[in-house]
Length: 199
Image (cartoon, rainbow, N blue to C red; front, top):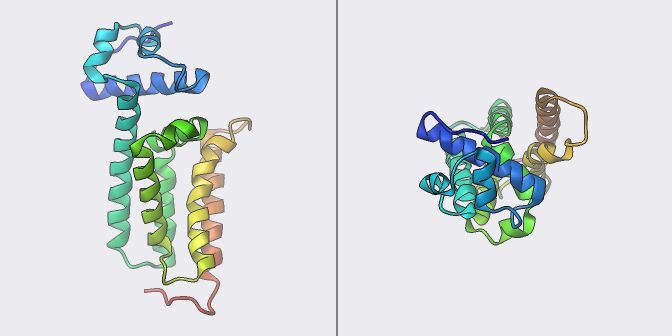
């Protein structure tokens, strides 16, 4: 059954992306055509072309939106004193992003790893991940703390697709993943010997 598009342009683009991601998850990125996306939406290909010319454009728009939010988070995080409370807030804000487009993007990337490697935005996303991790722990910190920072972020990423077969709500997934991420960061705070002093 088709999904009729309507409303503001931004809402329409969001509808297209949601339906496209559903089809990519069901049958794979390479096997999904723009025609099938248009049919699922209940519109003509011409109407779809008005917003997106290719499948790559649909994914690129998702990368762009998530990238902008990531850049805003990193910029804000760098402007704050790096205390334990601040690190926790960074993780909380990032976990909240995982409820929306960022979570959709993580699912797509996990299901279409080869295709993501061939897309330029995929490398940009990996660079942003590294930037966020360095906010939590940079190269002046012990290696174990740098790894803890990356694993704390990865726990939020992986919760999106590792819980698909679990009978839990999105709120339960969100809370459990955030608890794990914070435990990892708290573990690094407890390592006083050799630790770079907190600001």
